[in-house]
Length: 429
Ligand code: HAM
Image (cartoon, rainbow, N blue to C red; front, side):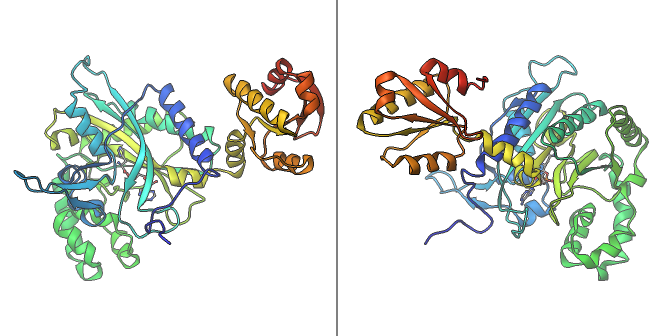
């Protein structure tokens, strides 16, 4: 038997309504906050991620699904990669389509995306090789910290809407490229004295980008990491002021947060504000949302000077974090409005017509094609969790009136088609 590839999975119809509910609430949040949807390809040139996300990151260094495209007669095969994240692709699209071109100074471009990402990580609970992200990016000439607070306010609304309450917002500033070299020198010196206590990956990070040492999950490295100087303590005045303003904007919105000076995020493009939202019900893979500012990513990708801020959350993890009541609500929304039970050949043909007419006015209708005894058919109607069962027998065909049973209360009444529509629309008797 051929099965799914390690780290990938099927999402079956019992669960898709739950995913759709999270997606629908996210789309509603994006609508309210003025974001437009962008859909980019799931594979891109490898160079986009190497330059955008950074060669020294775990994502690029270890986790990408990269392949050589077939060579054509005049060209060698190109190196392509299944997208491990979507900020670099969105910025590429922003540059490629000159989405900045007809903007007035200060006007922002707000984009969102929903789709699969691919990372060759060790699968475990909440961590997959194909996972799904919902993310948003705000691009333009302004780096106002109020933009950051507004995006977090939107996430706050989204989480409340789904009744996901037990979360913590962690924030930090990772400084800007101007202040970073001096700090990196300091950091490198501090790491140099402890190299013998650090893992092989950290040695590589020390050589390529010492800030990445903070990403290390190896237990024995943690004691060293706890002693390293933090970037937050080494910010230049402008970055410190930016961080203070960001916090003030969060305060003004009544959004609680914790400053975590060791949170640097695992992607190289971040500047200044970085944040994560941690969930309580997820175990080791507890980061629900990750995001931050990435001024200069556009320039790295040969685009115009651009400021950027955004986030992505793992849809898989968001679904896992939903309280049971929300899961049930979502599943209920995926059920049929009415299950038609028919008895006899004349009723069967009539049932097809009633089903078509009900579907035409917008109801979700279930019916079976094979005849069953009344008792079996009613049991099936209950099992389907439809709201109503509509019973059509020879009498009903003759009279054009139907027996309608509310499957939750057991109440039954006789209705004509017009009455049926009224009842299915949720109006009381
Ligand atoms: P990230 O922190 O790499 O950031 O990923 C964001 C979220 O994607 C994580 O918090 C997690 O919920 C989910 N995620 C990541 N890897 C996996 C996995 N293997 N399995 C399941 N879920 C996963 C980014 O990707 C940035 N592009 C976010 C961003 C947007 N920053 C600015 N704009």
